[in-house]
Amino acid sequence: MKVDDAVIVKAHYDADPQKEWDRLAGGKFEFRIASHYMEKHIKPGDSVLDIGGGPGRYSIWLAQKGCDVTLLDLSEQCIEFAKNKAADYGVKIKTFAGDARYISANPKLAKKYDNILIMGPLYHLVDENDRKDVIRSAISRLKKGGKLFASFISLTGGMVFMLRECPELITLPAEQSFIYALTSGKSFGGDGFTRAYFAYPDSIAPFMAQFPLKKLHLFAQEGISSPFYHRIMPLPQDALEEWYRISLAVCEKPEFLSYSEHLMYIGEKA
Image (cartoon, rainbow, N blue to C red; front, side, top):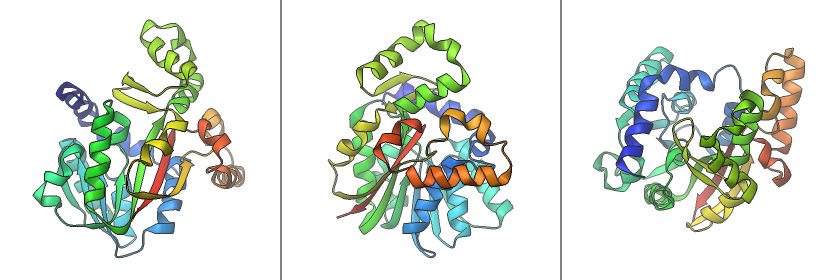
C-alpha cells in the first residue's frame, strides 16, 4: 500500500465516521451474522484487539459482552467517534490511532490477545505484501489457540452491489478493470468507493492457508440477502427474521459465498 493510498483511505473515513457507524445499524445481517460467529468463540472476559474497527461498532458490542477491548484504526476521527460512543453506551475501550501494518512494532500493543479482529484493513490494502504483513503482525499478537477474525470485501459481492444500487455505471471506463477481474475470476485492487481491495471468493482460503492458522469458518456475512437487501429490510419482523434464519443457515455453503458483499474467515492460531 503506497503512502498516498493510506492518505486517501484515512481521508475517506475521517470525513464521516457516523456513516460507517450507521452502515451496520438496524439489525443488518452483516453485523448479525458476524456477531453470531463471534459469540461462538469470544467469551466474556476475553481480551480483543479490533484492528481497523473504525467507529467501534464491534468493539463497543464486545465491551458490552464483558470483553477487554482495544481498538486500533487509521482514522483519528473514527477513534474519537468510538471513544464518545463508548461513553454513551457506558463501556470502556482502549483506543489508538495507527496503521494496521505496523502492529508488531507498536509498543502500546505489545501484549498477547485472546482474539483479534481484522475488519477493515483487508478492504483497502491493494498490495498483497501489505495484506500479508497485517496478518503476520496480528498473529504475532495472538495467543496460542487464539482466534483471528479476518473480513474481506468480495469481488462478486461488489458486482451484487453495483447491480442493486447503480447498474448504470457498467459502461463507465473507470469500471472496466473491475469488470475484467470479475469476468476473469481474479481479485481486484484499485479505485472503488475509496482505494479498495475486492477479493475473489475462491482466493480467500488459499491466501489464509499461508499462515499458522487452523481454519474454523469461512462464511458470507450477509448470507444470501445482499442482492435484494432493499426489499428484505423493510419487511414485517416475522418475514425479516425468517430471511435472517435462512441466510445464517446457508452462509458457509461455498455455492452461496458469491451472494455476499463481505466474507469472513475465522482461524485458530496453531
